Structure formats: C-alpha cells, structure tokens
Image 1 (cartoon, rainbow, N blue to C red):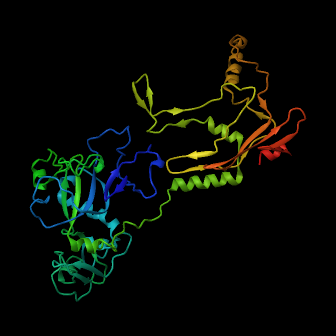
Image 2: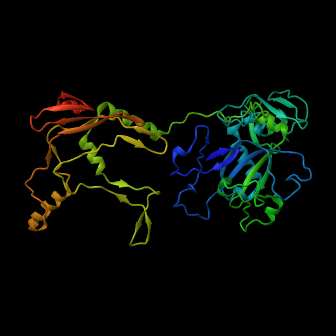
Image 3: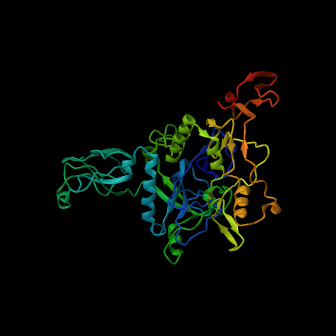
Length: 450
C-alpha cells in the first residue's frame, strides 16, 4: 500500500512495476491472517474476516457546519500512519471488542504502549509477567487525569492520592490479597483504557480507502446506534468498505504520539530490520554456487525440471472447464547441428534487478546431450518395439550428439550498461583468439571458461 497525506493512496498489486515508485514514496506492507484480496483467484467466503482501514485523526469541539453535527462528509484532520486490520465476524459484533482490537494494534505506533492499558499492582503467584511491545512491565505506570495532567502511579504500598482516569488504581490493599495478588509482583494488565480515543465509523471506503473522495457525499459518517439497529441477522456490525476513524483529544494525542511538530512519542519512523528467511537461504545458496560454481549440466537439468505453477499462474483445463493449479516442464526434443546455449545472466523480480555473476563451468570438448534429447529416447523405444523409425524420419540413432566448444560471448559490466567481448576458435588453424572491439589477441580455450 502507498501512503499519502496520512491515508491510503494506492493499492500495489504483485504485478505492479517497481519503476512506477519514486524515491520519496511511502510504501507499507501489512501481514494479515487471511488470503490476499488483491489476488485475482480470490473468492469471497462466508467466514472471511473483514478488512478495515484505520485512520488516526484529531477530535474537535462540535460546532455547526462541522461533520459532528452534519450527516454530510467533511474531512477530518488526519495524522500518523493508517493501518489495515482483519476483524473476524465474532469480534465485529461488539463495539467494545473492536475498540480493544484496535488498541492492541496501536502499540506498534507509540512508545507509551504500556499506558494504553489499565494495570493493577501485583499478579497471581502462578502468573507470568506480561510483555508489552517487547518490554517488561515497570513498577510505575503513567496516567492522564481528567484535566489533562500526567500522573505517575507507583506499584507500592503507599500509592499517590488523586483521581485517575482509570476506574481501577495501582494500589495494594486487602482486595489484592483476596485476588491472590502479590505486593512485590509486577503489575498485571486488566484491559484497554476506554477513553483513549473515540471510535467512529465511515462508510463507502472502497478498495481500503484508495478510492476515497473528499468531495463525495458517499463517504458519510454513520452512528453506531444506527448500525446496531440495521445489523445483519448474525449481529455483525461491520460491512464491506467500512472504515474506522480514531479521534484523539489534544492531550491524548500529545501524550501517546507527541505534538504536531516533534511527534516525540510516535514510532512511525522507527522500523526493525527484517530479513525474510527465504531470502537469507537464497543468498546462502547463491554464495555457495558463486564460490563452488555450477556446471552447464546443472543449468540444463534446471531448465528441464518440472515446475509447479502458483496460484497466480493457473492453467485453464479444457476438460473440466475451469482454471487449475498445474505443473509445466520443458524438454529438449531435437538437437541442432550447431548448439547455442544462452545463460541467463540478469535477474528481474519484484524487488531487485541485478546481474547474476555465478561461475558456470562448461566443457571445452565432449558435451554429450544423448541422454537428454527426447527424439532420440522415443526413437530407441520404438526401435525396440519393432517400429521402422526410418519411415518416421526420427534421425540416425548412431550419430553421436556430442559438441565441442568453438566460441564464447561474454558481457562485462552491470545491468545499467557494459561491454561485450568474445572468445572464438579458428577452424582453419585450431587456435583460439580473444576479440575486444578492434583488438584481437591470441588466447587459450580455457580462458573462455574462467
């Protein structure tokens, strides 16, 4: 997904060219516990989770003409990074459960992640301390009072006095003993705070909001009371193309994310380096091949190996009249008089375009393709069955399919440019030469292999 002005601007499919992205574009990926909806083979299932975009925005006092008092669409002041979440249909039946679900996702974007939750002092003896956002709980928790002041509450026998926004305080009293708490234990998470943000609902955010139009009246707000009255028979409150807006009061926004200039508590620009295991394994294999080299026979075996097609490359079966996941395989059917082997030296995938510099070892003399040519195999089988292969014009079985090297074309440089040179054998005198534009120098056959 591409992000622009704190909302989703474009959905990037697997086939989207990398060249269409600029150096300053903000591209984010979301790993969701469901099938990708961008896949052309995706078919909607009744139990599929609902994909909902989430936007963070400022909450402003209601006034005439603003979208709080009007059903017409107005643009809220967005900030931060939008998100995409997959909500199962059971969670989508309860507004409070959806609020808790969203709060859990907000942990990624704020350094004040612990204070998204209400805590109690002590923990049951057999309970393991809870980790939040990769950190252990501390002995003090910061709270925001109703007048916007920040108060630090200590998990100690003498907690500070005063009203805290949370309904439950970090205190040690007789009730903790009844609950089996331990005064010297770490704080225990009770649940998400209820007053961090106001969860609002907007409809008609097609394609995860990339088709959003600030001038369109179709992107209207809908009250939860109306949605509850019009819920489906199963009680699910969400519908396709819904979007969540999390409205933050000024003090809450400043505490969890920082002010509009510094955003000192926000983690929007902090990313952990993640290297995919398959990429690591591929690099390891390529390094081994580069050091040890591979043979031309390995390349031919790879070319004729059976390949399983993926879900994006389905084959249409003419018998069952639908697309199926199939396999494909190339074979060498007929051997030419002069064999030209083209080694693929450039890689081009979704994220990287580069030159392949793996060492390929190939024989100077005696490359035998007799066991790989399909025509020769079929001819031998039919001959053993008593079939006259001369009438079928399947070639001479006694002719050896052995090739000797007589020329190599090489490229020096990278993907952006380079220079071509060549090694070739003179059939008149049997000597090898190196050709570099107008420069020709004597060479050895082994020089072309290095």
